[in-house]
Length: 108
Image 1: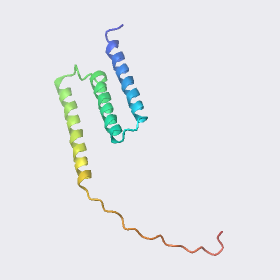
Image 2 (image 1 turned 60 degrees about the vertical axis):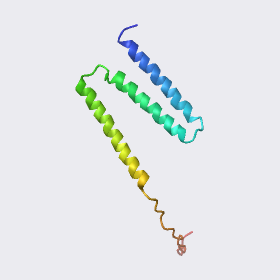
Image 3 (image 1 turned 120 degrees about the vertical axis):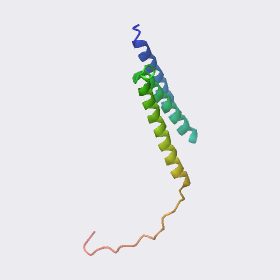
Image 4 (image 1 turned 135 degrees about the horizontal axis):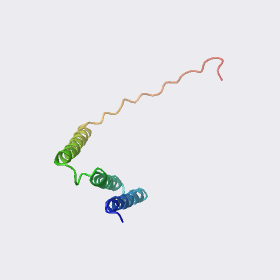
């Protein structure tokens, strides 16, 4: 086997296993744990893609720093969104009884 093809085949096998795990968890009713497990599996897929296909393992330091800064920025934005969502009060809409509209003359 070619030396350059081995990491790609290994990454493909890992991604296929994670895909099977992702599809398998969809059929198991675990409640909120399904969402958390799905996010963990998605994070693992993203790490495999970043390390193997984006070649961040052997990338120059500046490119690694840029990738880390992007990931940290995304986490900060998710954190701010979660804080906004958690601190909002629920204001239900005012219920109004639907109005009855009389039928027009000549319509069926």
